[in-house]
Image 1: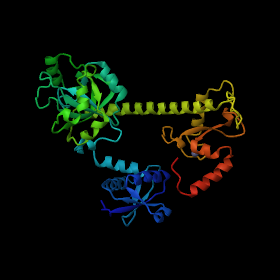
Image 2: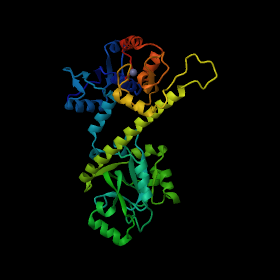
Image 3: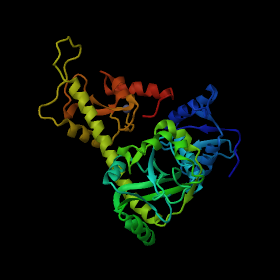
Image 4: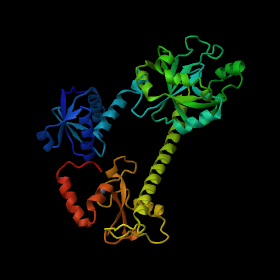
Length: 410
Ligand SMILES: [Zn+2]
């Protein structure tokens, strides 16, 4: 790979890219002078992540093209931001096998759940096993395999945790598949199952499959790294269960040294997990849509008049009798293909940016009705900008605003 100078100049063309660069600037990774800005060029600190990212992406040819000099990158961004690209690059650089510390495998959203165990995850026992079905239910409801992790802490009981070097220590960190509770004997090798069953009976009848597992190399004392979570494992309610590691103990975890382990049924687990991932994604999308519809329906009902004795400047809004608002809004979104009826850009239903949220708009502002013929869905920002104006007046504003090149991505 071509080695890069200290700084690189990014020629940004996508609006989302501009938006992400603003975030990068706040984190000190990117900056620009007014001279550069006029040409939509940004200077980016050539941090190692960026370097890796460029190497990766220029190989895939999807998002970056390096210019001849090696100092200018032209993006063919189709809505993918620089920040995302860098994160992608980082992930591409470090596969699960390469991770050296817990910090290498986590993301900002990751949460950790601590569970007491009699031994580390290993080819001997490639499963997270439990007795109480509630443990499975809890994990299914609370644990997200796309970002969360399970930590094993050895029990203090010599009968269960045979190896004294495992007792009260952090043993493993793993990603599980919480989709289906599986009979343990179906997941662990027959010899392991036979030996454990002989000694402990059907102590751990249920299991979740393990998607990835790592050894904590030095097996640090659990009470040194996660004292609060470890102590709470001993509370009666938590016995045999899992507890979430509090935020304040997160930092100490990140430097724990780990080593990836190959588990015997990994390929099978990957295949079944892909199916569950798809289901979870679908459920999430449905939830996001339903929340957005409820919010917009609430906005409309909140604006309906008269119901107020104060003098209103605008006439009360109306809704034809018998209108099913949820169905009407859902149909509008579908017809509009999730594009804003005013600016034509996409509306992200799960955005936390208030002005970019979708908002019900009356096409003819003089007509008080929110009925199907007078309803469209727009960004809140576009709706506010249009206010009582016409679509033509709004378009005039839009061309004025986009001229400044300081638009944020819608
Ligand atoms: Zn819009």
